[in-house]
Each structure stands twice: as C-alpha cells, then as structure tokens.
Length: 228
Image (cartoon, rainbow, N blue to C red; front, side, top):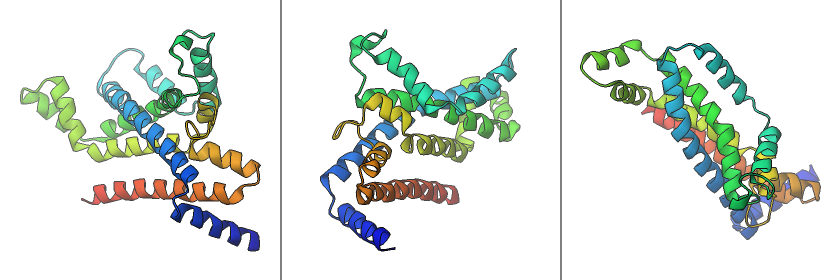
C-alpha cells in the first residue's frame, strides 16, 4: 500500500499543480478525439439513418459488414493508414504521418462504424409512425428523417458518446500514426503505456485518473440530458 499510496499522492499533486506535460497530453487527447468523433458523427449518423430507413438488395450484407467494422483491430487500421500516409504511400505527399491529423483520421475510421451502428439501432427502435406521418403530411424523405432524428436525439447522442469512448481510450492507432511525440502527438493512453514502462508509475496514474474523469463526465452529461 505504501507504493500505491505514494504514487497516488504524487499523481494528485501533478494534476492539481497543472503539470505542463500532463496538461499538454490531456489537451492532445481531447483535441484529437473530439475532432475525430465530430467527423465520425457527420458520416456515421446520416449513413446509419439511411441504412435503417432504406430497403435494398444487399442491405443485410451491409448491416453485417457494419457490425464487422465495429470490431476492427486498431493495429490493422493503423497499419493500413500508415501505408497510406507514409512517404512511399499514395498520400505521403501530404506529410500527415506522425501528426495529430493522422491520429484524427485513424480515430475517425474506428468511431464511424460505432456511431453508424448505434444510429441504425436507434432509428430501427423508434416508432415507425413518426417517419410515415411526416411523409403523409407532405415532408420530403430528408425532412422526415430529420424529424425522426430529432425525436430520437438521445439515442443519437448515446451513439456519439459510445464512439467518443472508443477513441479517447485508443492506443494502437495513436501510437502508430502519431508516433507518441512529446508535446505534439502524445495522448493520455500512449503516455500511460510509455511512462509506466519507464517506471514513472505516478505520472501514468495521474493521466489514468484524468482519463477516468473525462469518461465519467461525458457519461454524467449524457444522463443529465436524458433526464431532461
């Protein structure tokens, strides 16, 4: 208990003192994850809504593929994007590798199937009369879909929160595409892995506490919104 107690005390000291490296690492995590989940929502919510409301040949295969993409190994996503962004890759000229933009791209790829899947579930579970009534009253399919999304907005928010939870705690893509560069691409998860392996347990514990606090805060906000 002595080791854990001292480490916890040191970790809290780093947090309360707003240690520069802790703040930088937390900011990088929040920035990349927030941008990634916003981009994923812009793609995943419309795609999930379209998939849920449409009836076409191959829809079942599309749903199966979407479920498969939810379980994409992060290292595979990192490997593919590394090949695309590397100097020898087709997008190497953009110079994105080992930058926050590459990390955002990887996290977006991971989050989009999750957001789309939960959107499909929310739309499918909604009262079908909402969409049909809007159509009957003269709304276009796009307008009717927007009305439906407004009615199930808490389900959509939950989908986005689930995607955010995936990317904020992600390690493989952030490490492979970001390079874990101090002050630039080092996130909370990659820093925890690195610092713990170096014996800096207190620093890793500090970031772990912040990471748990972020996750708790996001879920509390979701619960408050649902109660309202």
